[in-house]
Every structure is written in structure tokens, then in C-alpha cells.
Image (tube, rainbow over all chains, first blue to last red; front, side, top):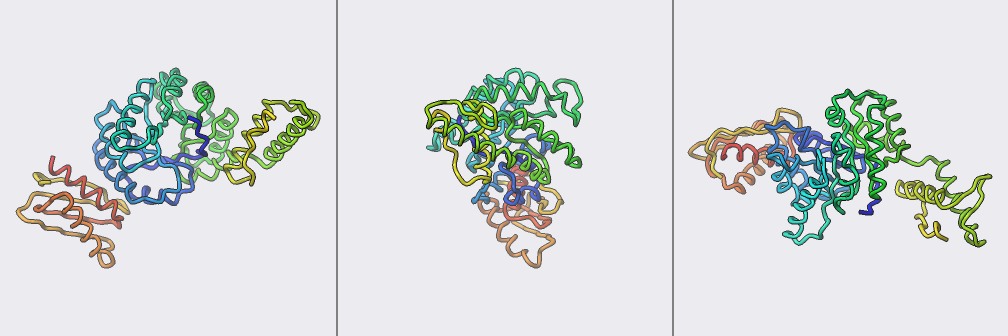
Length: 304
Length: 86
């Protein structure tokens, strides 16, 4: 699925807390994930399902992407979650503990069946699989390419470290390998890579460092558990003014090169060719999406 | 929906409510709320609406409200009824 929607911040909101749910329209995140899974006790699964459903039925003017994290389909709650939630038309389902392509396809089939029964377009509901065990990391590319509904892979570090039998640290070297595997699988599949939550809400400096790290690796968004983390993550994912300026210079240089019949230009003493232009276009797309530039990106410039 | 046993749903957190239901020969509704003076009549309308939609004609329904919005009132009553009718 070619889906370049901006998803810098995907905020988890516990499904059984009215005080958090009713603030969802106020949060400035790009996406919200209403959680029926880990944030809800077994004994309250039915209550959370009803609450999220009723909340969505009253929230008509949605200003952000809405996902619901259901319970895995092999649990006793997964299918009831879907049946309750789909009539309220969330944008996507976050599938926890997705370890194989078959599990993603199982959800895909459920969604297709519902869409067909309701006369909705096939693919109306997207899927965001959670890559959160060793096995799912190893299967990341197969999962990423299993369904056209999948717009990204979302890393879940807490369950991943548990499945490895290791402790999660704030420095992040324990997560380097799965992060690389996931971002490579996502890029190869042409979809987005979304990083895990940073759960130490008191340490904003470490949050910034971690977000800068995953941005350098190729991630375009991050999940989060506290709305106070939104601003820092947006700040990190926004292209810097000097990056935007440079990207515009690259585009202008290659435009002039094309006019004079060549595909290579020189800028500030450096060669500019197709890969450099691709990166510049990526920066300009992100800048435009975030309202930092006024002009939409001219994709044709790459090939002259 | 028939109430065949005691059922309960919700929490005492702010913006939430607790709903207790139990079998009774007739329909009785008791509402306690932090905002009873301002919104008591609206809460009652909502409760009646949800009970009617679920076909509840008998039972003791008690609400302890902590300033919940309509969607939460509806969801908590539904959950209590489902738990009491299963």
C-alpha cells in the first residue's frame, strides 16, 4: 500500500478509561490507538469494548487517524472486539503479537468479509501489525508484504525484550538489531516503520535522543503513551530548516542540469545525482506534509 | 434483556460511573451523582433510553456517577446489563 500519511505520533489510549478517552479529540497527535489489549484487565475486556464502541459512535468529526488495538484473534476476545468496533468505522486495526504472515492474513480475511457484507470498499480498514517477538522480527518482511492493507510495521519493544529474556534499557543497544530488521523489512516492502513507545515519561531528554536515533535509522513515527511526549517527537521528525533549504537547492540544481541535457549536477562542490535527489524529495515531502513549505513536491523532477 | 442476577460495571474514577443492577419485580432507578443538581434530569433521560433500547422492564438499577459523559453512561449500563443477563 502506498500510503504516505503523516504518522509521527501514534498515541495509545487505554480503552477502559473515560477520563482519557474523552480527551482524545483534544490531543495533537497524528494518530490515536484505542487499546483493548494490554491496557485492559481480562475481567474488563467486555467493558472496554463497550466503552470504546460508544465513544467512537459519538466522536463524529475526527481530526486524526483512529486505530483500535484489538486482542489477538486466537484469544477469546479478538473476534468480539472486531464485531463491536468495525461498525464505528475506525481507520485501522492494530494487530498485536503478529508473528506470521498467516496471522495478518487471518485478520485481512475477517476485514474483507465484513466490508463485503456491508458494501464497503475492499481495503477500507487498514492493518498495522505489531512486531513484538523474536519470531515476528524474523518474519517481518513476510508480514509486511502479506496484505495490501498493511501501511507500516510497528515495533513493540516491551514484549520483544520479554521474548528475548532481556531487560530493556534507556540506551537502546538491546533494540538495535530488531529496529534495523524492522525498518529494512518495511522499506523493502514500501511501507512505514513506526518505532516503539518510550515508557519513561519523566526523561524527556532520553525520549528526544531515542527519537533522533530512530529517525536516523529510517523510522517515520513513534508510538507513545503520554500526550506530554507529542511535542518532542514532532519536533524531532520535522525536517530542519537547513535540510529543507538544502533539498530545495538540490532540486533546483538538478532542474538546471536537466535543462542542459544532463542528469548530474554540481552543488557546493558535490555531485548531485538521482539518489541525492530522491533524498531531497523525501525531505520536501515531509516538510510539505508538516506545513513547513508551501509548494507540493514535483515528483517528475527526478527523471527530468 | 432480562436481569437474572446481580451485575456491576464501571469505576469510581473521575468522568466514570458505577452501575449496579439486580433482579426486581418492577423497574426502579436510583441515581447518585456529583452533578445531580445540574444534570440529574439529563442522566435520568439517558438511563431510561438505554434501558428501553435493551428491553429492560424490571430490575433495580443504581448509578453512582462521577461526572461521566453520555457515551460512558451508556457503555457502563450496557456492560452491567450484559453481565447480569448472562
